[in-house]
Length: 145
Image (cartoon, rainbow, N blue to C red; front, side):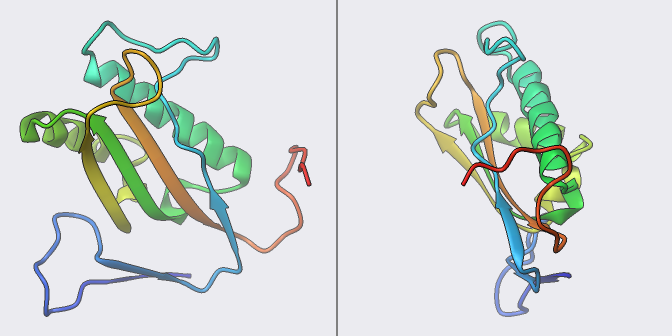
């Protein structure tokens, strides 16, 4: 179960929740998902926030599914965008909210403008934590211990 809370003593958030409480016993902590295609190349032309956002969304959906989770199971998100321009940050946020991943951003989350990310030309990265159903291992996955 995921409970979302917005205390009346702080500002009303724009689409997300100030607090997310979960009773789940298992959590999946996803590595930051980057705008890399299957070959490991950064997608899009230099400065193409839209293409990179779409690739990160696709990667997040794939990794969530591999863990046995859906966007609605996300309990925490952090979105990193290489920009200090609030218009660019808002544009990326709008694209995310129009994507299949949108339910992931209704829980506790943060949108950050940063100076740089790990790959050359990388503009977007998303870090997610999701709650999982109680079971031993995700289907079809090899668990490294």
